[in-house]
Amino acid sequence: MKTILFSLVKNPILSAAYLVRDFFTELGAMAVFTQQATMSIFTPPYKRTITRSHMDEIGFGSLPIVTLTGLFMGLVSALQSIVELRSIGATSYIGRPLGTTIVREMGPVLASMMIAARSGSAIAAELASMSINEQVDALRAEGSDPIKKLVEPRLVACTLMTPVLTILCDLIAFVGGWFIATRVVQISSFFYWDSVLEVLTPAFIWGGTLKALTFGFVIGIVACYYGIKTGFGAAGVGGATTRAVVTIAISILAIDFLLTKIFIITWW
Amino acid sequence: MEPIIKLRDVTLYYGTDDVVQNVNLDIALGETKVILGPSGVGKSTILKAILGLLRPKAGEIFIHGEEISKCSERKLVRTRLRMAMVFQHGALFDSMTVGENVSYRLREHGLMAEELIPNRVREVLKFVGLEGALKLKPAQLSGGMKKRVAIARALAPQPEIFLFDEPTVGLDPVNAFNIEQLILKLKQQKVSIIIVTHDVGSALRLADRIVMLHAGAFIFEGTPGELKQTKDERIRSFLDPANTGALDHF
Image (cartoon, rainbow over all chains, first blue to last red; front, side, top):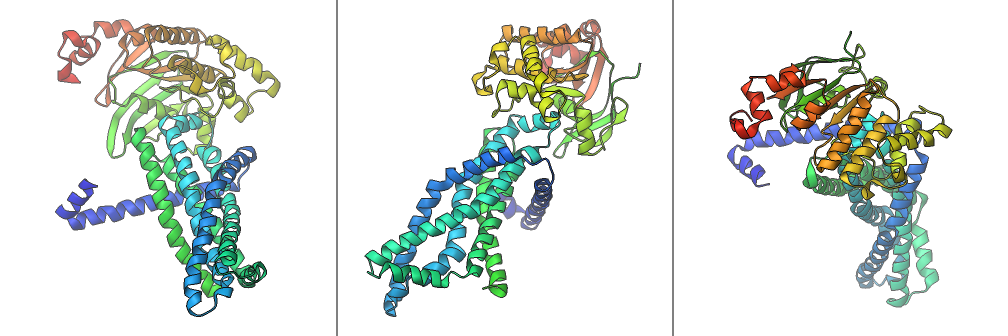
């Protein structure tokens, strides 16, 4: 970091040019990797058993953290909504803002962030460790394709499990919201769920699920990419994990903005 | 006789640096050739290029007369299946048992009927003296045992070419001796073997011919006897660093 800062001060134009070049080189390499991994998903043989075991690991493994995220998201969102709704005397409609914000935005983004932190980092670290121990080279030496063997099952598992966990996260968030609604503002359970369901149109539900599916794919691709293309030694594993999680987090936020804009223009 | 492996003017690189420049190498059928040299001069890189894991920057690599440096990954798989590499630290697959590691290629590529695989696995594990390790995971093995399992994995599909990357590095003298004995046993099967090492004693004991890599180029090729007789100062200082000005050359 110190070196980058020093070279930026010393020769800003050249350093900036190098940074831009490196960024696009990395982007290009990731695009090629994404293409290979995506092609692999649709090319037999399919690694069903390994994929199922990764789905189990990502799905059940992330369940506690996603449940807690959903619960606190619902509790906090409900409390924040009450503050605003109380000023206009509309606290009984608390389910409406919760329904839209959780399903369209907070559910997919926060659940994906948690899956990235837990499973994305684990995938990057595992693959980086395999790379450093020459197991990836050994796979190729044994005539196997590391993309097929290592990347495809993890990518499919992340892509499929993120929407499932997001839906669960949304449901738990609604339960959190229901707790605040019935205990703090004393509205009836029926009225709460009625106002939640009122805003949950198929377009919102599909939009949120599509976002989660995209985020899951991004988690799988980025984690596998940094894991496989790691540097040397223990620092390589640490670096790969950090880069993977940071890149996933930024990508999720950027893609969320893009998808929201597209959905608003087309569906919502 | 036509060499089974031929390298012609091969230049290999890592990042922006050329590690090996314009090297030529021939390995005949049934020959054991040792690539000797200090650490970090590109010995393992040559092995990876022969296996097609690295593409050369320039030059040609022929395996059984077929040029592999520019062929597709799919074609390379066919070539790789005629070879087996024993990596420096074994590179066993962590998630699999010893038995699964050893039978990996047989099952993955359907090289043997399923009912014959357990026997073949037991046979090669017996060859390396690890019959009892069938169900163990790599994490439960010592360094020497991992190397022996890696040799068993290489042996199982009966390839024509064996590549060994530093087979005795990091092992105690007993384990190093055991590994050397295994390689000598393997030599009797008339397969081609390339061994990369910086261990002079091991090279002299195992090689039919030795090539010495220095500063990215081969500076010697000959028999172990010829190596001992050489007058080249760079080689002498590597063979006997205590009595020569080793630091002047390495």
